[in-house]
View 1 (cartoon, rainbow, N blue to C red):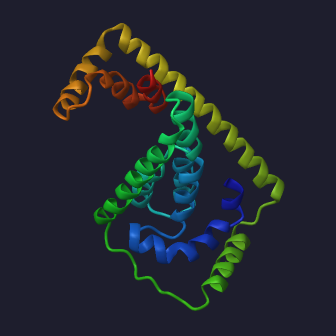
View 2 (spheres, rainbow, N blue to C red):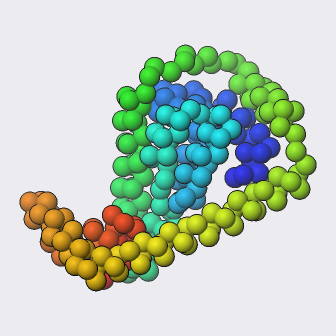
View 3 (tube, helix red, strand yellow):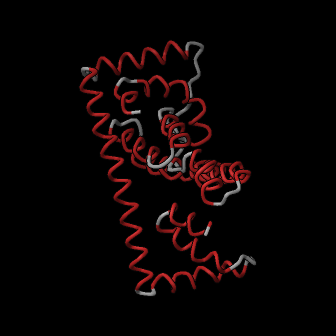
Length: 225
């Protein structure tokens, strides 16, 4: 993903996706890159690419905030295998989890478009592909780097991201243990159980829901138990 950004492919993709992203989400076409990889690769790809798009001025701060709100997703493998197969032992639930998760995020993205100022008009052209190639070549001329440099930066960023993710999972796991030891988690579970009771959902799920607020994987594991 970082290599594609550095090589200007996102500029190429932005021209092609602009007629789709502008009407649906009031976002630049380049944002479609974060949408595609956020939905197919899972956490934290959407957030990382959104930050990269903002750093390279492909989108504004306001657009980046809206983009991150609906592209920070679980991966298809997590929704189709990890939760239904490994945790719940019911593979048939995978499609339901995938549909609920992705449709909810796309709905959020669509609704957030109404908080954005009216965007620029979309100018469709008969030479869309030619324009896309031209924009990519222009970007490459302005941001010329050796391939080895781009590759090294991409690997370094990838390793850094992996370490950060593992660190945050451990951090919230320890935090949950501390909250449980001090009975604060039990208080949170009691508060969460009130709306569950109103919707006639078993209050036992309050433990999983409370854990899921802090770290989703831990919440899903608690739900399966």
